[in-house]
Length: 158
Image (cartoon, rainbow, N blue to C red):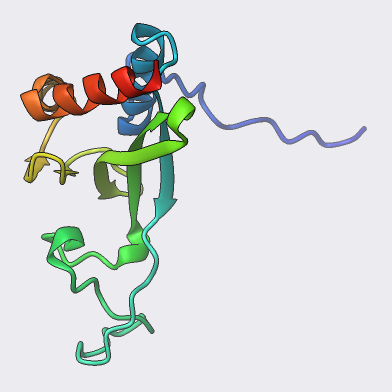
């Protein structure tokens, strides 16, 4: 008789958990639906690449420097490869035009805290929890500058 090894993993339930990427992707879908796909959006994600900094003393166990650009500096001085960046990109397909509305950076294995950057309105947020993340997204989407850009792209696309 063959010795069967049983699955020791418990059921991994993700109900009620919306990772930052899931929240952003849902908002991308809502933008397309609310504009009848005149505007669309997508979320592009990737691990931050290691950045070599010859002036930074090399840390034991790492052969790359730490991020030096303040925009992407983690308060914990985490190596770049331990963090992920999600870019929320809005597109006007009829114009063959797209731009990054905002980006979110967080640790690879924990969804919060996040750093949210919105260059359109020159704002940077450090967000500790999902509820605040949703609130900040809503504020950004409602700003007069973002609304003006979206309305202008819709008008040019028709």
